[in-house]
Image: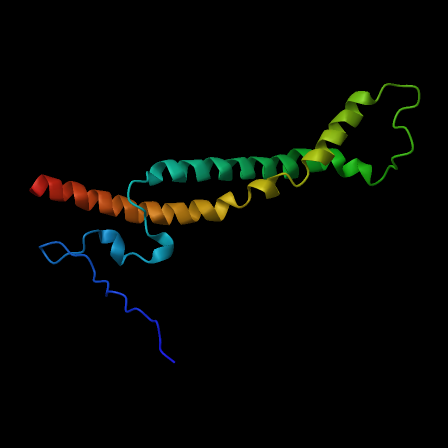
Length: 138
């Protein structure tokens, strides 16, 4: 049986005339390797805003909404809180608090993404610094 395997050409590392790699990103581990042409300041700011929303919802739930719902365990849903009175506003806030419970879980993935983007941004800034120094030297 004959094999139809075609030998692929060997890939050599691209290097410029000075013996340095064409991009300093080649020496960076692949999970945090910046892609050329992407502004990692913008990406880090977007992940920072998502993280801030997660922290805001967590603090809102723990500091404001949980104390509002603390009295619900003692009372049952069937008994009215005020006999003959209007408790619609209080019930609306409690319903809002129940609906907001756990909302921070939606935004929690932004936290590790922020840490990742900051590490990628670190390497990206180093590359930008070296590129600007090379321009000044030439």
